[in-house]
Image 1 (cartoon, rainbow over the protein chains, first blue to last red):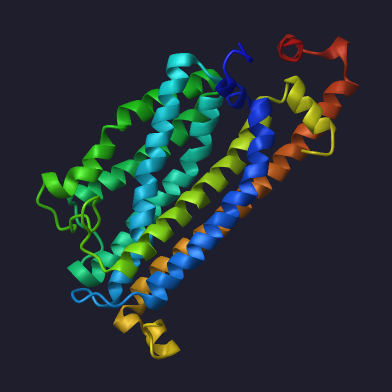
Image 2: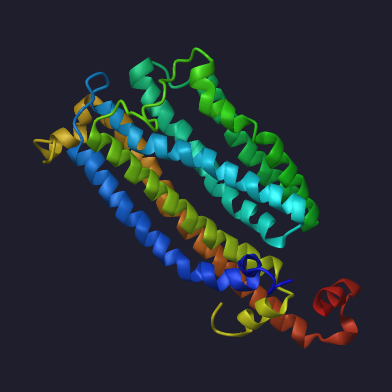
Length: 248
Length: 74
């Protein structure tokens, strides 16, 4: 099985563990480079917004955090589907490793949104479709973590958590399209594939920040995945060899 | 190239300073703390697993529970 198809090799924790260890510093470096470039463009070079003044600059973290909160959930749901369909060991570990970072991104999205909403709308919070569905996303992350932590048998925990992730995935298009489907206080999207309503430096600043958040999330999730892997695989030969040696 | 005239202007953010820096501040804090927490947890886990492994190898065969035997047999 292991040699039949090359991709399976990377799905094995014994291969994945050292590979992830080598990749983490690169993702950290990329996150720093993208972050510095994005902050430079967004905070120092980009002009002011004619409607929102300097308050609009919250966009440079609000949008990347919101995108990541949705994207991380989709990746977790993808792993959940793989895990439930093929019973792979790695998928449960990956979903578990991503969840806390996804929850933090959802929280940051709500936090920066509140700090943006107060001066622009006059309120920290409204029960509007976009905000409410993002709050539900945060609860889905917390629910997933609580559920998997509450079940002692790891395989059952992964299965139950995977089902929750797959049911909850319906929330992602609701968040994304909420500004189109309902009449909400939240502004529509500023970026789409054909044209953008933003100045060029603003757009680049935001995209660079999004790349920074992306690299950051990968780096932290890989770190967490390695710990989970070692813990769960502690009785296997590769983990024992690693723990016995210096490398761990 | 730089949009701001002075550091004071930059920090004031046109009157939105509290909101802008409140957003960036907490984000920076979380992104600084999360990796540290994850790295510490990793170190602690490795040390604990090493201790467990040493303890398990000291108390070989007779006192082992069936569950442990199943796990190590795999």
